Length: 142
Image (cartoon, rainbow, N blue to C red; front, side, top):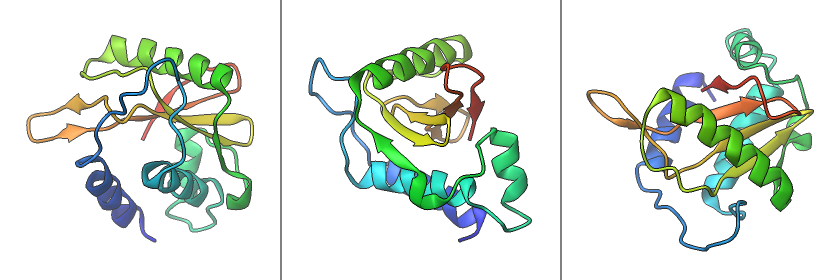
């Protein structure tokens, strides 16, 4: 799948996503959005295509087989990743932080998404996925 097709799929999935209302949980559970995120991260983490490898490298994703990319449901990990996400997004603008995140582990890194959060530009709302290292630092945006 091309990077353009993945980006379009990303926008299609998140234009209809609504924040979950369950309280006291930082981890969002497996659903169609989490599967999409696992597939997207797995695509870039396992990339061999000369157009996708530079994307993986710019995101600082470790080269990892797609089968080793997985959704995290450990509350301690989600709380730390969610706090790092909120801190980063709080500095850069946008709206809608819910405190409930999808966390995808890829090697020693995490891809984190709060689907309630959107960055606003002049034409559309843009959901943001951050890539964090194992210490929940060094975010990259995609």
